[in-house]
Image 1 (cartoon, protein in one colour):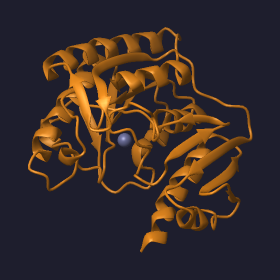
Image 2 (cartoon, helix red, strand yellow; image 1 turned 180 degrees about the horizontal axis):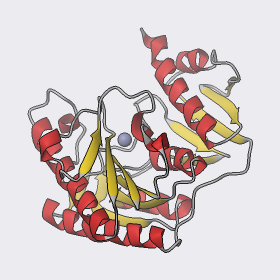
Image 3 (cartoon, rainbow, N blue to C red; image 1 turned 90 degrees about the vertical axis):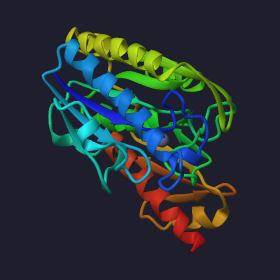
Image 4 (cartoon, helix red, strand yellow; image 1 turned 30 degrees about the vertical axis):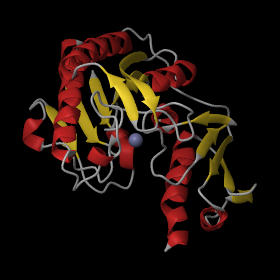
Length: 275
Ligand SMILES: [Zn+2]
């Protein structure tokens, strides 16, 4: 069983505010230790569940947050400025299941802690007209590669969204959202125990064929609302994109891989309008 783990930071137990999620903040090293703890819990659980190989993709911000020597030595670690971002290296072949650790609710969610989608740019993202977040966009990409998402960890707002988008996936709630930059969190050790057990179940259930891959009817409409009209104008320069509404763009994707690539291209291009 080959297991792919994408690890973000905003959904980790004990992280409630955006400040320590940024490099340079005095609290950033401690936040990285919390992120490593949950990543390792998922790796350990995956091996208990029968994993033979685990790849960890450092999926937050500049994407070199995890200290390599702190990560379980049985796992490989993907880091750095990756073209395919939170799903880099997932296409390297034959992963049986993906685990999302430290994830968070979508941009625009009314109560999710540090709810956003990739950058501060998109205020709302939809797939086939349904609001979604990183779990949905990444899950759709992985689904196109035949990889089911077996576990998603983060706050209660995220768990509610995942129940709709990836109902077969194990869900671990490590904190309850108390607002945009506030959360009520379990102790990191409790979170790690929950994540390890759920990761084990996810891998076991993947081996038993109990998980589904996320697929949507094609073509897939990707809708993105941006911070202001200028950002939408810039994103709409991408071939195939249409400019819609006050500050939105729309793209019809042939499949999940194209939908993902279109989304990432648009959110990277849009902020150039602010320069
Ligand atoms: Zn994120």
